Image 1 (cartoon, rainbow, N blue to C red):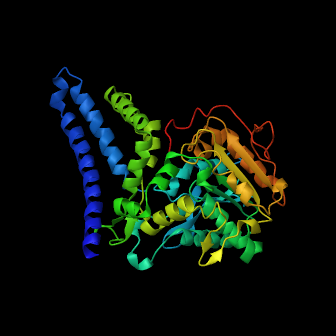
Image 2: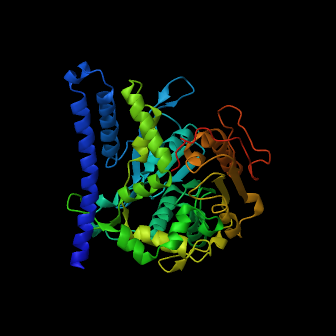
Image 3: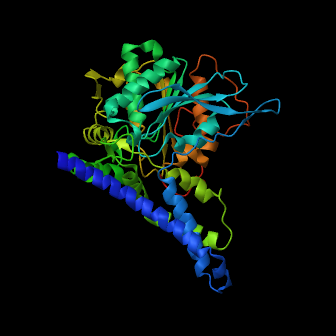
Length: 449
């Protein structure tokens, strides 16, 4: 056991060493190629070398830096902008409930809890989602912590603990709440709502919107679900679980490293990522680069990864993907069944992308069948044509098509529907309670997440 733990630490530190080495190589190439004497040589080699160094150094440095929220000010009716402050509402060892407080603005009628994924990226991956909702809503988000920075003394954190956190967050915010769960937490948000429906009905949210989540992974196969079915739990633990080294506060904690998850993300669309970096290097060498261009804006977030606790990663694969406990309505938290059929008073909406290669169409909409106690009038589904996984919560499809439908759904199932202070919104041909189709999502970052 001691040898196994030592080997895990060595592996963890080896990955960090490789990252550090690549960052150093990029910095060295940038410095050497930028030496003024080389400007006298009539060759583009040194410009390409300097550009490669700048892009490489920045890319590998971002992998261990948690991005800032950097939320822009919200324009006010009187022409004065309202600054946005990021404030923890509840602090917990493995994740905080964070509130985006808009200065000098009265509380909004719509109160939204965004449930961010714990799948290798920080909650800041939903920055554009938060920014798009703030003009019309008061917004809170689950801000999960990097497992490498959590001391072993704080205990474990698995799918049951995650679900319990969601129950506590919903209780804290009260019943006049709209919950939006994006990707990985969709099944656990459904389970948390089911627990409240039975134990504390008054604390249930008004609406629950599930976006691109694996409610029933077997409903439509993807590379993610195929991988989960091919590999045994023993193989997963042996191949991917490592022990945090002494460099971090979580030394000794068993984790699924964020860098390992990032490698699998990139491998799924390797050609796309390779072209993106080659194009960026060429642009930098030609003097056409920018520190805030679309490439850096996307990859600064995409490359920033966090470790997950080993028990959370393994229990997600085993219970959500292999045993299909949510899909079979057999998920339990601390021995108590989260019976999805007990949900009756919460309106439920699902959103899927037709080109989603992470949670394919059919996986998320399965939630509506599980919610057998919810009247048909309180159910809605939307399939966004041409949209990939990222686009349905942060791309052009979200901004122009999906967001208006979600806000309309909230208003339809709130006590006091509110008129939205914005331009006339596009609607699907069948309305919010049907499957709406729109044109292709041309702003899906062109890179799948």
